[in-house]
Amino acid sequence: MKLTDLIVFYLQPDDQDLRPPISLLDHMQILRDILAVYTGSLMGNESPEEKRDGFRAVLDLIIDAGISMCTSVSESRQLQKPAFDKEVFMLNCLDYVSVSI
Image (cartoon, rainbow, N blue to C red; front, side, top):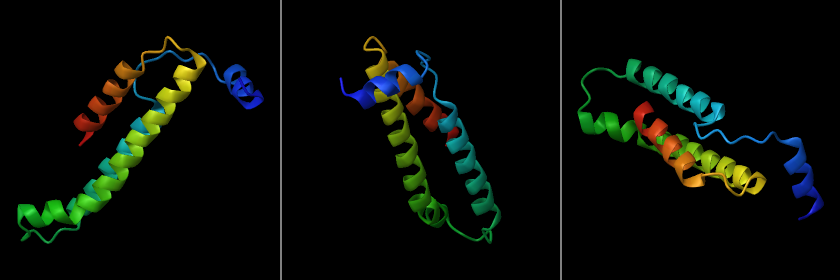
Protein backbone atom coordinates (compact mmCIF):
# COMPACT_ATOMS: atom_id res chain seq x y z
CA MET A 1 0.00 0.00 0.00
CA LYS A 2 1.16 3.50 -0.80
CA LEU A 3 1.20 6.23 1.83
CA THR A 4 -1.77 7.99 0.21
CA ASP A 5 -3.78 4.77 0.33
CA LEU A 6 -3.01 4.41 4.02
CA ILE A 7 -4.03 8.00 4.71
CA VAL A 8 -7.32 7.54 2.86
CA PHE A 9 -7.87 4.23 4.63
CA TYR A 10 -7.45 5.75 8.10
CA LEU A 11 -9.16 9.09 7.50
CA GLN A 12 -12.33 7.80 5.87
CA PRO A 13 -14.84 6.04 8.07
CA ASP A 14 -15.48 2.36 7.59
CA ASP A 15 -18.65 2.81 5.59
CA GLN A 16 -20.29 -0.48 4.73
CA ASP A 17 -23.65 1.06 3.92
CA LEU A 18 -25.06 -0.36 0.68
CA ARG A 19 -27.55 2.47 0.12
CA PRO A 20 -26.89 5.05 -2.59
CA PRO A 21 -24.67 7.84 -1.27
CA ILE A 22 -26.16 11.20 -0.29
CA SER A 23 -24.30 12.79 -3.19
CA LEU A 24 -26.29 10.64 -5.65
CA LEU A 25 -29.56 11.56 -3.96
CA ASP A 26 -28.66 15.25 -4.30
CA HIS A 27 -27.54 14.71 -7.88
CA MET A 28 -30.84 13.13 -8.85
CA GLN A 29 -32.80 15.89 -7.09
CA ILE A 30 -30.98 18.40 -9.27
CA LEU A 31 -32.00 16.36 -12.31
CA ARG A 32 -35.65 16.44 -11.19
CA ASP A 33 -35.41 20.23 -10.72
CA ILE A 34 -33.89 20.68 -14.18
CA LEU A 35 -36.60 18.46 -15.66
CA ALA A 36 -39.31 20.54 -13.97
CA VAL A 37 -37.84 23.75 -15.42
CA TYR A 38 -37.51 22.14 -18.85
CA THR A 39 -41.09 20.88 -18.76
CA GLY A 40 -42.34 24.30 -17.68
CA SER A 41 -40.54 25.99 -20.54
CA LEU A 42 -42.22 23.94 -23.25
CA MET A 43 -44.78 25.65 -25.47
CA GLY A 44 -47.20 22.74 -25.31
CA ASN A 45 -47.31 21.91 -28.99
CA GLU A 46 -44.18 19.70 -29.03
CA SER A 47 -44.48 16.07 -29.97
CA PRO A 48 -43.31 13.44 -27.47
CA GLU A 49 -40.25 12.84 -29.66
CA GLU A 50 -39.35 16.55 -29.61
CA LYS A 51 -39.71 16.65 -25.84
CA ARG A 52 -37.52 13.59 -25.41
CA ASP A 53 -34.87 14.70 -27.91
CA GLY A 54 -34.66 18.17 -26.38
CA PHE A 55 -33.76 16.78 -22.98
CA ARG A 56 -31.71 13.76 -24.02
CA ALA A 57 -28.28 15.47 -23.91
CA VAL A 58 -28.88 16.82 -20.40
CA LEU A 59 -30.18 13.48 -19.23
CA ASP A 60 -27.19 11.62 -20.68
CA LEU A 61 -24.69 13.95 -18.99
CA ILE A 62 -26.33 13.83 -15.58
CA ILE A 63 -26.97 10.08 -15.58
CA ASP A 64 -23.42 9.30 -16.74
CA ALA A 65 -21.98 11.55 -14.01
CA GLY A 66 -24.16 9.88 -11.35
CA ILE A 67 -23.12 6.38 -12.40
CA SER A 68 -19.47 7.42 -12.52
CA MET A 69 -19.81 8.83 -9.01
CA CYS A 70 -21.26 5.55 -7.73
CA THR A 71 -18.48 3.57 -9.41
CA SER A 72 -15.84 5.72 -7.73
CA VAL A 73 -17.50 5.42 -4.32
CA SER A 74 -17.85 1.64 -4.65
CA GLU A 75 -14.19 1.22 -5.61
CA SER A 76 -13.09 3.44 -2.73
CA ARG A 77 -15.21 1.50 -0.24
CA GLN A 78 -13.90 -1.81 -1.54
CA LEU A 79 -10.33 -0.57 -1.07
CA GLN A 80 -11.19 0.27 2.52
CA LYS A 81 -12.86 -3.05 3.15
CA PRO A 82 -12.35 -5.87 0.61
CA ALA A 83 -15.51 -7.61 1.87
CA PHE A 84 -17.64 -4.64 0.74
CA ASP A 85 -20.41 -5.87 -1.58
CA LYS A 86 -19.67 -3.63 -4.55
CA GLU A 87 -22.21 -5.30 -6.82
CA VAL A 88 -25.15 -4.81 -4.45
CA PHE A 89 -24.11 -1.20 -3.87
CA MET A 90 -24.04 -0.53 -7.63
CA LEU A 91 -27.41 -2.22 -8.13
CA ASN A 92 -28.90 -0.04 -5.40
CA CYS A 93 -27.45 3.06 -7.06
CA LEU A 94 -28.72 2.07 -10.50
CA ASP A 95 -32.15 1.28 -9.07
CA TYR A 96 -32.31 4.71 -7.44
CA VAL A 97 -31.33 6.39 -10.70
CA SER A 98 -33.95 4.46 -12.68
CA VAL A 99 -36.67 5.25 -10.14
CA SER A 100 -35.69 8.92 -10.13
CA ILE A 101 -36.20 9.35 -13.85
